[in-house]
Amino acid sequence: MNKIELIKKAYEIAKEQYAAIGVNTDAAILKMKDVNISLHCWQTDDVAGFETADGELSGGIQATGNYPGKSTTIEQMRADLEKVLSLLPGKQRLNLHAIYGDFKGEKVDRDEIEVKHFQSWIDWCNKQEIGMDFNATCFSHDRAANGYTLSSKNEKNRKFWVEHVKRCRAISAEIGKQLESPCVHNIWIPDGSKDTPVDRNGYRALLKKSLNETLETKYPKEHMKDAVESKLFGIGLESMTVGSHDFYLGYAIKNDILICLDNGHFHPTEQVGDKISSVLHFIDEVLLHVTRPVRWDSDHVVTLNEDVQLIASEVMRNNFLDRVNIGLDFFDASINRIGAYVVGTRAAQKAFLIAALEPTKELIQLEEAGKYFERLAMLEELKTKPFGAVWNYYCLQEGVPVGEDYIGKIQQYENDVLNKR
Image (tube, rainbow, N blue to C red; front, side, top):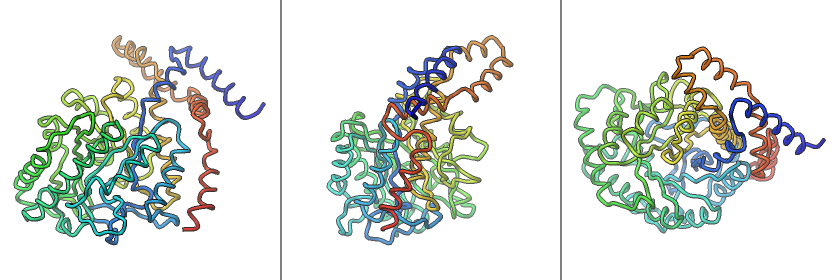
């Protein structure tokens, strides 16, 4: 029996086992068509970007490691992304930061960027038949050197960043219009204080003022969606973050925009999965940044752990897929960057498929009947159901490497492409 026959046979056995507990595996696989993950471009080059500056990181961001083969040009980045897309089941998206414009060697400051600097990216996404999301880049710049951007008390600097975000929103709207898929524009700023500040309120008043100014122009929601992203702290910003979760959640609710929940941006004991059903009672949509923090917001490659599984389960249990925008956010420079992408994205996809294979209705019935032992027992038994057979069959259907077969594909790409850079 060849490998394809084994995969199909294993799937048929798994299908019967899941059917015995009321789960239709074919329907679960079909649901995965709606799980579109936005791939963060900055994993390919350690968040360096394509501005003419040296690409040195600031704002509490660190990409650790120096594995050979990182992309240094747009052509290399697109080649890497195409390789990644070829190894993933389903249809993904691209998530681009403003520093990745096609500037063609020209010095273009961030308050001067235009659609033309990103048109080649739009064309590339169109060719790949994928959507695209966008981010203002409010870090790694001279005007962010003192730790403040949209909340800066230096009015010239504050206005600079307001103009940058305005231009990013306009670019996002054009991206969504051309690709006929709403572009999520996310605002994250590193603003904060290393030591204990006195005027927390003053900085937050300025941030609110700046956000109001950036959002003055309204764009159709079928073209772009606005999101704001909080953070607990950053390196060099340990004592106060201006854009805290409380601040942005209130702002998002009041202004009818998205809140971005990054599971690395909270206290280690907080679970983003628990927040999803809370915030969606008050706002229409959320943006997720799925990552893996190790002791802090360290942006490790996503793995199939309990935190990621809870996020996926909460989305699938409540049929929230049409209200949740899924993105990844990690940058590991210590391993093969293509491998990091594929491992991390597949891990997130596995979490959503596992969630789709849950007999949610039956579990809720047990819960409502007070049968908590039975609920716990079923949740434990689900952990050893033959999910792997369903995942392999899903990959086979999508025409991408099954199981560990992608490892050899990435090793070959490293030998043929990455090692020659």
